Length: 407
Image (cartoon, rainbow, N blue to C red; front, top):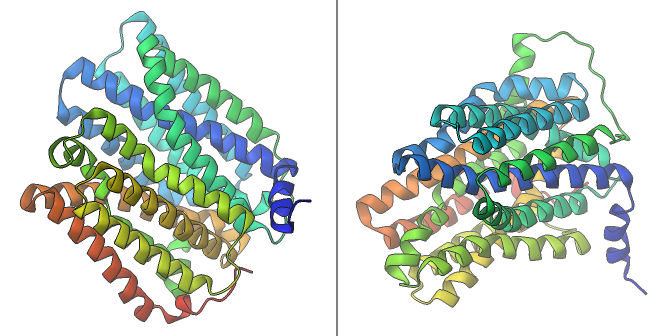
């Protein structure tokens, strides 16, 4: 006979709104992960320029950063399912454009960057709407398990998407874009079929103050401010994964296969931890557990920085992914449960902006520090900095540290 936690976790897969949401989000994330390989390879194939590769993230981040508050307001004012569906259709159309241009052999760098800008715009709207919709499709009292499963789905995409993109590109430059088009079309159909059990209807006209209400709400709520800012600074300092090519070639002397394995290691660790949390959610001292997870992430980063053995480096990266998943699940659940439903889109937009900024700037910080001090000192300082931030935040945000349960 199944245990109660296992039965409760399994019940989520028999809950149609969550099931449709999870598969829709999974197909969309698979498409993004495929794009990371296909677009990067094609741009480098066309230009042989590291500068153009560096522009890929920037071209997507700029529209996302500029539109994030508008996107958050849209997620609170309009039907979130339709916002997500429209974004996925727009992304699918951009992928189809790339596929057609690749087949015709006429695709230019400018056209690729235009498509990437479309991806950035759509992602800016899709992210907050998706995070705000999750509490409405999860059964009452099961948000933490639902978040763990959704995080696991993301990690499956992070592992499988790049592999699928690489295999498809080897067949034809147009193939990965065709797969992305099909996945985004499937995602949009699934999004349209979702029945949200706790839908929100907002009738107030948009105003300037409402547009930035999410930022004010975060600022006025110490627990939410501490949660979101902890993620920003911890990821900003702990961006050691940006240094993986240096570690694989120059420090571990292990070759390209090691880079691929290390790239997958955090996602594997995260996926395993997501499975554990889906069956055994954290029920007590969740604030303390979140800080402990961030400290564990920093310690694993230090271990990775000092490692000279490939197996130890892989284990350290997997531990980083597992620790990060504990932190992500608690942070997301805390923010969603502490935010009124009519504000979740705008607060989610602030969170989305912080996450994007920390990922992009974290890679930049690691790269700059490595250029000045070397890869190992950069990774080591990043891990120690993450631990220091967690300890400081425990003192600055005692309300967050004292959170006992996710209710």
